[in-house]
Image 1 (cartoon, one colour):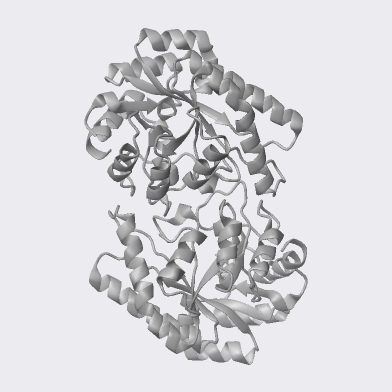
Image 2 (spheres, each protein chain N blue to C red):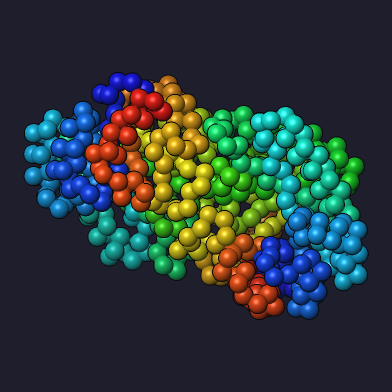
Length: 274
Length: 274
């Protein structure tokens, strides 16, 4: 991948050192014209100011993260979480994001009924859809790695994401976020990407380190791990995806580095390894 | 689950403190009449002595672990690994094990071609089959958790294990080891267990801890985690499985404990949580 116009950086990649305005500046300085926004960073300054900062920099927004997580057993908690998702839809639209990225949510403490948790998560998405449609964005369902099933996402595979898209009516307002780190291992990767043709709403890139030692914050810089990233990029392109290739690295190791150096490395790896 | 005759303990559960003869004694002392044997423990004393120790104690053997791992790119390495698998088949038969449990193997250093690694692993199983047939045992393919794809097993899901059984001819000498820790998250769990009816050769039990902090050695004692173990036991039973329920806990935390206390806990949890 050579054309820098296809690169986006998810601001989680520079989570610890940069606010939203600082990330906008930092990415623009490196010639990167698109980013994904993290909700906590947005709410630090409010949607209005965030939208202005992003617009003034001419920055495109490849995604707003992260919605979903409607697995609570308590109906009051579940409703509260749905309301927050509606707010996120509005925030995504306000900053010009093409999609709200959404994950499944984990299991409540003591909950062993995975099937019921999945049904609640899917019900939540169904309730959210009218707002998504009104806002003119796409709800991008992102399956996370199965090792995060208990804590972050009962939505675990591309097959399941495709099934949920179908269950939600299969309209243009529902899509899938394909994240290399979460799906690279899947024996059905090719066939489920093919099945997702026309509904891939985001493409996230990071690498799997063979000596990984943390379930959430040890993602690898593209090229440092075992994933054949170019091959997956070819498959999502073959499935019709024309959007940004968004580098998203949740990594304690990279969070300790100078963010400008991290961004420079991302740009170099975008050219050499993606 | 109440009938202690259905319980087996995989000796990895007491890995750090007990040799094979000590494990045989320890399990028998607790009234447990079946175990799974780990190859390194067997080779410390040799197959002949191992067989005698097990037979003298009247211990049933629910599995011999762990074969497979034929993913090497170097043909010499691959052949050497196949030869070692043939030796394992003979060792499994020698100790009266009903099956050789086998995993996929990881990726060689620098290998990013997951598809080719999977083909080599499957080719290895195909080459191994005549020996398995001659020995009168079952080759039990065990999908490991996807988080171990790079390092331990390119065989990641029950669907894939079922596909591989089909690809290997679907005869009675090929089966599947269902391990709750590895498969509990799978959206296709029920349908793929049902599809595996008649070919489930082993059933391994441990729990997923929501605060797990290690990819290999932080499995939970049954009842301490989020997995609905009784539900999965019902499904494998509904699929015709009548063998042992083998507790297999790879855990740095439990390895530090007194093995007799660990075994007593396993027996208690077998009654209360499985």
